[in-house]
Image (cartoon, rainbow, N blue to C red; front, side, top):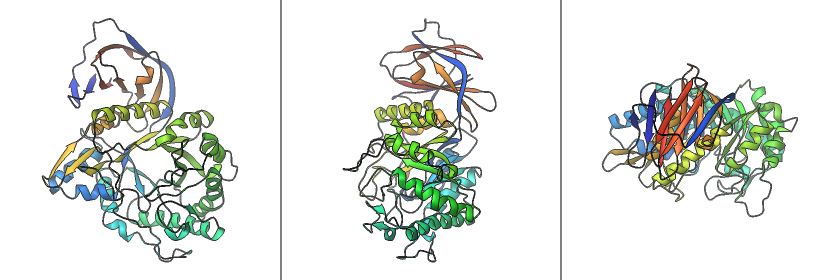
Length: 439
């Protein structure tokens, strides 16, 4: 057995397993039932991340990329990653791939901007893992397609001419990235459609998703012979920050769109982030035939504390226990301070001090490692029962190994008994600790 533990004082310590001789005060049982299959774990490529990495000496930069993406070794082995379509909130400034107003035929479409930051970042990762899968989403359509005509706030102008042009925008993007050796496996139609923000954003309703996917985007991808999947997402309801919007429950997005006879045949899955965590279980129960994805890890406030890392671990446990097929971190790498171009300070797995030329692997790097390092693509989650089941997840890998990740959120040690189809194990869990056991 391999056993790793992380606490506030010690990150990623390997332990030797010996059965705990103290009587168990809690337990968890493998029911023998299976749920979802894992597609992978990943992070999001963004401009500020690569700009930060580029401040390091080449040898240190390459070592970080190895730790993030190499499919062998002792790093994270990230294999399922996200990239923005145009400017995200962690771009250096506003931009889209359609810079010319009323270019409905996309004659001036260009990804030239991405050659400086995004494509080198992605290609560095894919050099290490050519099998990496990618999904992409826009934070905003081109500004000339919106009202008001700005990247932040607003909505897509809902005319057939505009919607046809926006579908063609996605087609051009997929084709352009394919030419760069970056196949886009999935398109997630809009980042956080329930948010109107000072950074790139755009509000969508469920009815609008259904119409756009069913009448425009789905037919456009099919007409151009593209096999890229269309996903409903990335949904950040059921809460909303729009002052007059109440169309934000499960029934107004996933249930509505997946019941739409025109849109549903084009859709492969649903992605959730932030307050979308409150709807993921309903979607999994209503539509178990569709895949689900946790598409953006909540971002923190740049302080990278142990307390927030514990919360992130609870998010991993929540999403994985409710059926997602993958979990995607947000900022893999940032400068110290983690500030966006719009003044938002956020956490990252690795922080860079450009003056010292040094990098710090933060707690959340190791939270990701507790899951991504050993849970393989194709692993199946095994359902658990018992008093510790909400603090634990169990996976069976394609090679028949099993991975248990569990947390002890208490300030006292706990003694855990795990009953599985391959044996019974007992563990002493240190106070306030996170564990991965591989057996």
